Length: 114
Image (cartoon, rainbow, N blue to C red; front, side, top):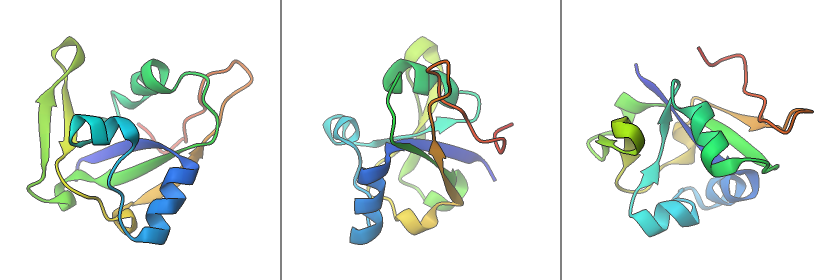
């Protein structure tokens, strides 16, 4: 199992749960796929795209369970990032945790990350 992660505004995630489907954030919708990060990438993703933002959640998924719509594509610095082409069932999350801001303004990641 390759666990991948999605950072998302909590209100958008709650709306996805209510609708039974997550089609993506505005950035995902613009790019045509849902952005994910690996455990090694997720903290940098938070710094680059979510710096100082409160009210976020971190959702973990079994990448192998997301089907053929998931592919790993080169992105910044040539790193291969997981992208899901298609909608996501929010109930497929292994877990969802708040991604709070620490006193230093950086996000405090759950201890569940390697």
